[in-house]
Image 1 (cartoon, rainbow, N blue to C red):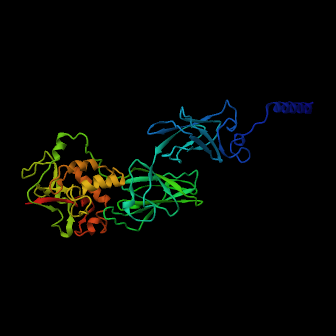
Image 2 (image 1 turned 135 degrees about the horizontal axis):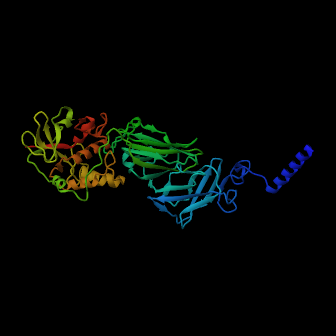
Image 3 (image 1 turned 45 degrees about the vertical axis):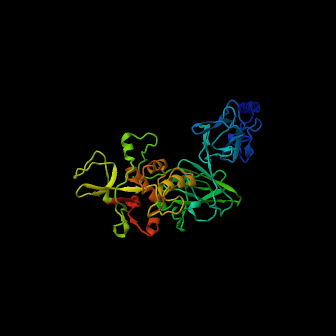
Length: 478
């Protein structure tokens, strides 16, 4: 009797199972991309190609885009792509009404990519993902600046390089593994965006010491690598030009190239420029110069002053033409020295033992000077060192507003001061002018362990790190 009951129960269970069907694990469902069942490759996202599963239980994965902090709705055909860890890939077109791409029935972890963005736009392909608990992905897209210049070879000429700007994204086109494109950068950080899913391109960056004024370049380059998101072949680069490992105060000219795994060219390399990661107070504070509305006290500092006597550089009587910053100090307004002199907001010769301020220090702005002689363009009496080279040459030629070592934009400030210069092209030295002079000297490598422009010209100046701002300063001797 017991055997009969067991057999009857087994028969009932078998009949029940036939009626209900067979359970298939999710990893083996058609369309999952598993090698034992579903197909691999890109699924268009049509009704016949969507991943399998019960419609009532399906998750809907979505992708949307932003540009400049606002939703971006494409006007052309653009796709979102979900790449599964198992090799599967599914795509869906972005709606040109809502700006959303949808895909139902995905199950697992996916990297998210964008296909067919309009020309001039791109995104970081290495940072977006989705899974069952995070089905909605927002991708930030950017406009990029194309770098095309005559320096797409191994020609070490800083004048053929483009100055990059903080916050901007750049793209370079490379026609072969030996093609190099040049750019100038100081006090910034950089990250390359080669696609690690595609995993076929590795960028190369080499940094050099260069003086854009003299054209001198130390041919011994420093190979920069690592730090960025990587795969088995693609190794992205992320670094700051102020990192100690790369001697940031020496490297300012960079070449970028790339190697394609199968030798297929051209290739495109994107890289983003951001603020430097300087710590420890090395970077000066952001300039407080107000271009639009200067208050009354600041306006009083803009004065055309022509003292009697002859202009004399501060280094002329110093041994080895040494710049000595301790001899000069800002005479702040509202203060007096022991001789009863009142502060005027300018730098002066200063006797620390007696606490007495002497001659006002001037800085040459709108004319050439001893360390940067006239070269015929622009003429000495209408352009010159700062007004010509900063306002016109450095901005127009390099299409960059950041004109000093730290990437700060002093252009309009210099143009304003230039209107108040005397017959020598000089203006009394203020604190903001001193900040700019320091940044400019660092940017142009005026002092570079004996190889700088100011160290190798006919006057052969010398300076400590902190005193470089004095290179074109002087006072009037009756």
